[in-house]
Length: 423
Image (cartoon, rainbow, N blue to C red; front, side, top):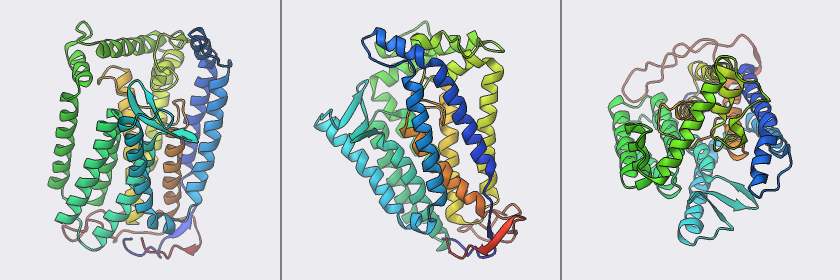
């Protein structure tokens, strides 16, 4: 969709995206290798039966699968990806509906796996989170839909607003309402706002969607006692704990801050983490940034932050130098996905926001998040090979199409053959 791109030739993709991703994965493996024995011993003391290096070995397998997925996405023909946009989004909504049916209504634990009273995982041979499929589906579908609306000068019409608003509402109802996952709901909101911003929709309409998201989020907080109590505990300070769930979260937040504070400037060392022995909940998952702060210290934690900023900068650069509407909106959605995960996770660990369970991209233990994040980055890696030599002028000639084409240039490292498909 969008204008023809025959003037742009395929060139080498941005290798810095791949390097940044692999460095973050490597750091995650180092952390898992260091804390796997501690986690196994702690869980075994509570009746578990885990091998000493089980979590490291499993995470290594997750990384290998994720790298394979990355290169599959990189090589996937995007003419087919665009045509499959509705199918991918439908699969995401369908799996979320299936999770709601078997979890919240039928309570079939063999299919919908309850964790801490919430149904977020589905087991169909393998266990995974439908919300991750939904994120990818939203990015691909909205890229195809919005780029088509831009091409037809229908971006700011009532039909576009209603379609987008309906998808937003249904997504948040499934994720925040049914799955009780506020962190993932915020990520989905960030993805959708990112694609709107890059599409060039009128600012007043974007602000309207932001207001709707804020109101929905507030309603979900106010009607859910444990969310309301946690917010009040956060606002009043740790000396006031108003419920058992808030007490648990307050303990979690305190232990995360203790871990980061214990690390000091240089850290206690990779093999000397104390918080990972059972003091800090979810130390291999959502709390892994606090563990890195303990082991690597402030300087090491800032190095990890710098790696994420590097990755995000390369994604932004790809957007700026890419004139294909479909590809630009895809990469913008991926940027919102990665950035929201990083900011929410790190802010929660340092106590800047109420604690929200969300994995740190490419580092936290687990296969589903790592797999789909790698798939998304594989898409961005593909599009980085179709950028122009100069940044694109985003100013257009009218309200509807804000994507001018007057500054498209050819790349230095172009290969033979042009990209003739219209997107």
